[in-house]
Length: 117
Image 1 (tube, rainbow, N blue to C red):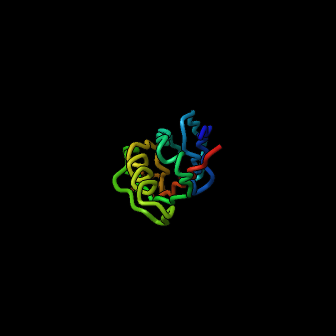
Image 2: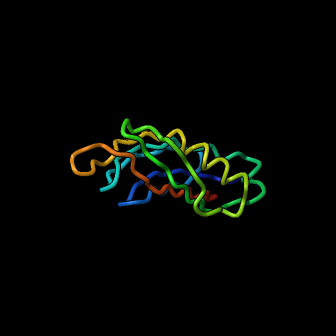
Image 3: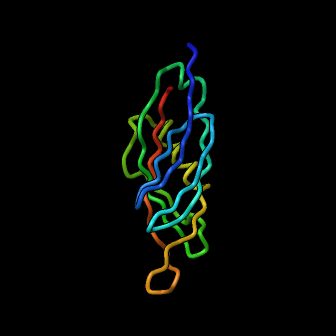
C-alpha cells in the first residue's frame, strides 16, 4: 500500500494542531504561547495498518520556554500514537506568556492529528 503523509503544525489560541507524517512543521502565534514542535515520524508500518487518530497532550511550559511536563489529555485510540505524541511534545519549545508582567509556567494543549493522505 502506498500512502502519502503530510504534516502541518499550526497553533490556535490554546491548541497546537499537528497532522503527523513526513513533511514540515511551521510555527504560529497564540495568545497563550508562541512555540515550535518538531514533526513526529509516521512509521510505514502504521501507515500499512491504516492507523490514524488524534491525541491531545497537555504541555506545561516553564519560564524558560522548555517543556516541564507532558500528559495525555485525550487518547487517539492507539497506544503507539499516544506515546509518539507524548515524545514529540517533550521536544517542543515555547516563548511563554507573561502573567502580570512576570514569566510563569503555563499549560498549553497540543493536538497531534495522525492522518494518512
